[in-house]
Length: 177
Image (cartoon, rainbow, N blue to C red):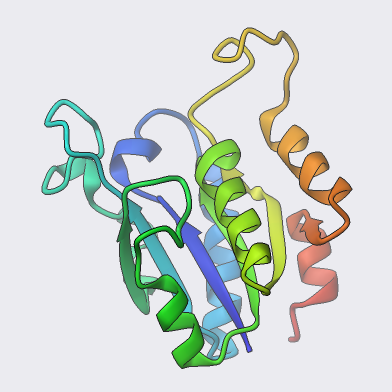
């Protein structure tokens, strides 16, 4: 069975940029999973520092209004990996999931760490590159011209074990109308 992970689509992240395209692609994928009765699991990152935009209990911690109604499960996490010290593995086992699709924020941290962690646990992993987003840019990393999503997608694809697709490829391969 397949499941969709929607990682850290929270107000405290979405408010940092214009993520209309990414949110639209995520919603399209979520609706496809819903139409096929496949589980949609949302991850929520939290920080302990009150000044953090993801401080538990703050408005920034809450799931973004555009997608929160789709969550079958909501799991909190405190590290980039959605598996570390969470109930995600137990829920996936209970549901009989063997194939995880990854979307969400931040591409180079939580999405990438979760994809690698999922593979390490024996899941088939599909990373939908253009349905991820990040608040960071080439200036953050002092690497002019760096396209973070493309870089992460390329690295994961080069691994030979994580399937990396863009939305159009996802539709062609997986969406059954």
